[in-house]
Amino acid sequence: MKKYTAFIRCGFLDACAGRGYFITGMLGSFIQSVVFYYVWKSIFAYQDTVNGFTWDIMKQYVFVSFLCSNVFSMGFEMNTAQRIIKGDIIMDLLKPLSYRRMLLMRMFGTAGMEFGAGLVLTGSLYLAVNGTASVHPVRTVLFLCSLLLGVLIKFSIQYLFSLLCFYTDNAYGVTKAREVLTDFFSGALIPLGMFPGMFRNLVQCLPFQGILYTPCCIFIGMFTIEECVYRMLLQAVWTVVLYAAGTLLGRKAFGMISMYGG
Image (tube, rainbow, N blue to C red; front, side, top):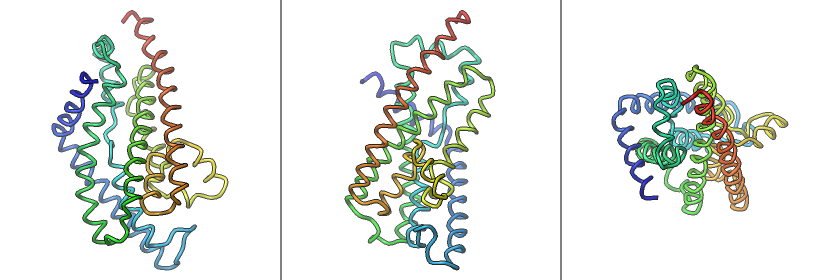
């Protein structure tokens, strides 16, 4: 395990080296969240409740969703594609280490910096708008545990999409497809509770809800404690399922290197 901890530092240093991209990306997401805040504010100015959401709940959701969506927002599909095209990927696979674990440890280093910066930026605004009474200690602990599971789900999905780069040179399309699916089906754009009946039930069967919607609803009190535990168990199940899918697809994708002669 000690061999992998060094990659946490590498991920943190990578985020620091790309601080221009990191800062502009976070500011762009923050501006988007501010726009959503005022859009929802204008909607709730004409009605008190929208599909079970009140304005008090929604203004909490906007800030918490911003924090969740910016944890590990920097994907690695483009970097993987470049290493595949240049042939550098073989150097990663020849190391006596798991390629996926190396990526995971790098992700933790990057996500740690993103979470810290996002917490400082949104935490102060959240408390200013919603007050300290909206922060429940037990739900905060459950939120952090759920957020960690959500990050693992997001990593697993990104890992699956990165493996598609073995089959196509269009890494930009792969990355954008993953971003669109993740943002829409995770509740980053619209809370899943506002989706129409059958479609909402279908979406909530997918793993994407565990990335953002579940942690957000746990923190703002949309779920009971029993439902929080159930949702977190569902996140854990999806983590295992996606891990197994990544293992199977990884074996097939890495086998292509041998087929093409390395």
